[in-house]
Image 1 (cartoon, rainbow over the protein chains, first blue to last red):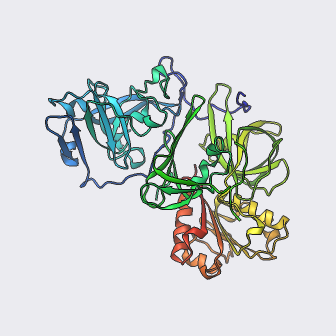
Image 2: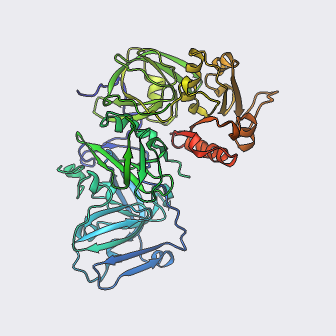
Image 3: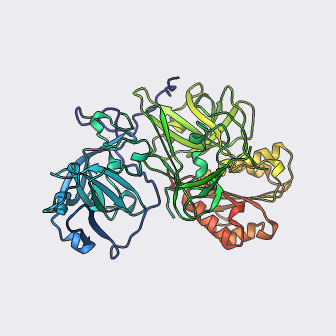
Amino acid sequence: MPPIISRGFGGRRRGDAPPGRVPPGQYVTRDYPVLSAGPTPHTPLDRWDFSITGEVAEPRRWTWEEFRELPAEDVTVDIHCVTKWTKLDTMWRGVSVDTLLAGIGTTAGYVIQFSDGGYTTNLPLADVRDGKAWVVFDYDGGPLPPQHGGPARMLVPHLYFWKSAKWVRGLRLQTVDEPGFWEVNGYHNYGDPWREQRYWGD
Amino acid sequence: MDELMLDGNAAGGVLGEVFAVEMTTATMMCGGCGAAGPVGALHLFRGAGIVLRCPQCDNALVKITEGGGRMWFDFGGMQTLEIAM
Amino acid sequence: MEGTTVLGRLTWQAATVARLATETPRVTTIAFEVPGWPGHQAGQHLDVRLTAEDGYQAERSYSIASAPDGTRIELTVVRIDDGEVSPYLTGDLRPGDQIELRGPVGGYFVWEPDDGGPLLLVGGGSGVAPLMAMVRLRAAADSAVDTRLLVSSRSWEEIIYRDELERLAGDGLTVVHTLTASAPPGWAGYARRVDAEMLAQVGPGPAERPRVYVCGPTPFVEAVAEALVGLGHQPQAIKTERFGPTGS
């Protein structure tokens, strides 16, 4: 049975949808809904680190101080959540994953993002290289707030936003794919919003 | 304390679409720490789907996703589910 | 007595707006007619779904504020100014309009007269709604169970159901208000956030083994539950219904 339309509902908080900017099935939002699979972690910066592990000749690790000394860049992108909201022109500052992986020796084809609190999400390694991904620590001109993933989260805007782990602590490179927290429970293994790859089999 | 957290009671509607018995009074035993209690008292978070976590150890007992005419359940973090009949 | 109720699966069903009533400047009670409503228990909630013409959907959960009454149910909704759903429900809905709802939900946060007492009900803001269903059911059932209702509101003008609570008080029901933002001149009641001292004074104490229900925004519920445990109440005797962040 199709849902009942409620007279006059909708549109109050939504933004304009410029043609070509909004993937199929998405609605533009002006605010920034907070979604979380678990309690907000609060790792103190003096205990925070970011690691590259797994199928690498030598694992890499940065403390917060070391991480903040890496070259960073400002990035403005649209983000698309699988729960159907899209936010245009979000502004971030962070370190390109290309910087973190520079010169790394690996035969890995896949990367697993892992976070405080146990969240994981998986991608082909190619999807975090060549200017497609960042580890960001600033949002909208200020430090990334904890409920949005601070102190640092992944930003992989060409895929649905569950593929950008909040509270990220590192990347594990693997030769085998390993579906992550949501990928094992119905969400699409790749997650391209332009092909509306939300769920298994899409 | 997490402002976003709700009680497992809030998942009663979604669980009720699939289970023909009242689920918020069902008892779940955590596969992580062994704590047991009513589903209604679990800690509920909404991410891309619903996650029900153990109030003692934060272990994810249940994940619920819905979309495209399907629902998915992961009870992997749960040890046992008890339903009074 | 708790157990499970064999319900059959829940589905979305149509509800028609029968009446809207202003409770306070920002709070509205909406009465719905729901054909085929199976009845409900006091404390249960339901999920509301709104679908726009372009297919956009939003879902929210609301506690049922009314005692069981055939196919009629009432929800009490606080208007969040920049919200997505509450301005529509409190400002745009008219009698005859339709929404979808799914329920009733929740055998955990319920009270029936046969459950007995004493009862300690603590509500913050709109968290008083499911507790009001319990209080109304208690009145309809002519129950004399010792019931203490502690209501936290920002101001006198913002107390939801204020007049009805005054009428229902007595016959074992004690209603205590605390005002957290402003109080009228001459106010002799509590004028601060709910704390352990207040809970100890409103009682009943742990030795009386009351059934406790706490409902409201998540920070409120957490603070009250923690204070109650600190006073010696058993965690298992305290049932909570968190509404999420304040203003959500």
